[in-house]
Image: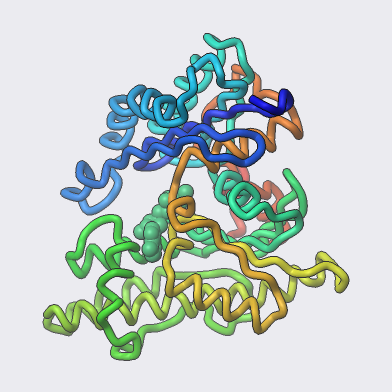
Length: 364
Ligand code: KG4
Ligand code: ZN
């Protein structure tokens, strides 16, 4: 390596249904990015089955590491930091990644860093688009739909979250109802290409509400009822896909518009507003274009990571692990996997969506 301060980081991601291992350098080169997905195992169930997913991680993780090393043309001894997702997510998978990451770091005698999966998504644009803090983040994935003011490493203010379901979950459910496969988002996007987005009028929960949060459960129910009242043909499936994609997109844009105003108040008038989108749903081109338009209307710069790094991957975990290591050093090997791990632990105080938060605080 030319730069002796440069670090090589391995990132391991196992929090949902993808077993992902990536090797990056601290100067933001992605040397390998291996993703073994379980879609074919899970398609027959129409969704993620935690126990099936955990066993698959166990079966795939060693191969994912070997493949990642092979592609990067590095040896395991070249790794300077091992970062692994420590939560939030499906606990079986998180345990597999955490135990594997700790053991690898211990055997190599290098630092282990437990990474918050949401922080991985939140910081991806710093790896791929080299952006500076602060920025407003719309985090849209299968499990989360949140808007976060990312002020600096470790300083996150959650401005909005979903009251019920996530946007990705809504895509997945819609695809399941239409019988077009799993994961739903990419299938809906593909099918929608030939559909008319104005053919079915669907409700937009929270649309124009002063309350900054999202809601999708009413849309899911309404979609299911609309489908049951219509004959499913190739054309109606295309039209229904286009209509739900447009509806979800309009909800995301509307809520982001409110948070852009709050964000401006937080950062003050002198800084340029940057709007970043991340998470699996951020790979949707229709939604990216709608957000870009919103950013232009609000005098903001729009940044979306490359499509293949929006869905779960190891590179985002490696990068977040590197930033975390620089900020607070290595993680204790006693770290316990965290099924709940909010980015903003005080979110329930500043934006309470439910009164009874429980002893362990907000979920994520
Ligand atoms: O970030 P991610 O890979 O995993 C979680 O952390 O949840 O996000 C997966 C979610 C799924 O719900 C999937 O349907 C959705 O992202 N998704 C999409 C697209 N690609 C993935 N949704 C809409 N359009 C897409 N192209
Ligand atoms: Zn994710």
